Image (cartoon, rainbow, N blue to C red; front, top):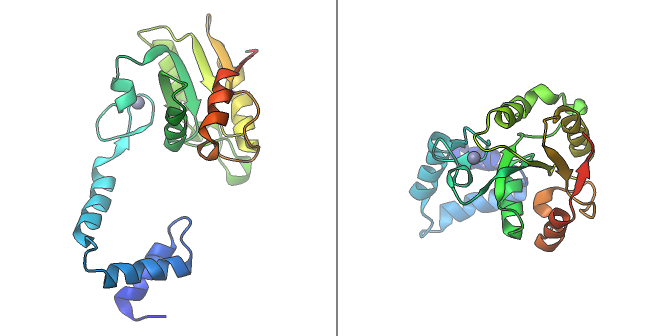
Length: 201
Ligand code: ZN
């Protein structure tokens, strides 16, 4: 245990995901002892993150504007929407370069154990979006994580997505079960996109 500020910082860092007490201590001492470390830049970035970064009005991706760069890009295919759990999944899919459509971020997956139901996710926004799109959406790809919650979410969505002329697909199996899309390698994720299959709605 250290005194005052040092311990406060270690405690605070230790609350971050993936940072244990030892790492928290190492980071605190790095900041304390490394003269070239730009504390004010880090402080400004953290403040800006909370003040300026928000969620896209349309898709729920992170952005510093009303709309994210993907929703603002006229070259993206407006007729196909890929539904993901988190903004970080978009990053993983973009890395594969297999997909040129738009996204919809749910903000998680259905998880009764943790009290997360459909109403806690951005599902109504998806339905509104499909009903009100300027360009008719022809395909919705459900790209939930290959987990129990992801499966529950996919099953739930399939039942809801009954729009005339809309094809609902999901990624091909082959992604590591229990994992997170963001941890799938680009080739595997790219293949899962190519081999996506149609679901009966
Ligand atoms: Zn967007």
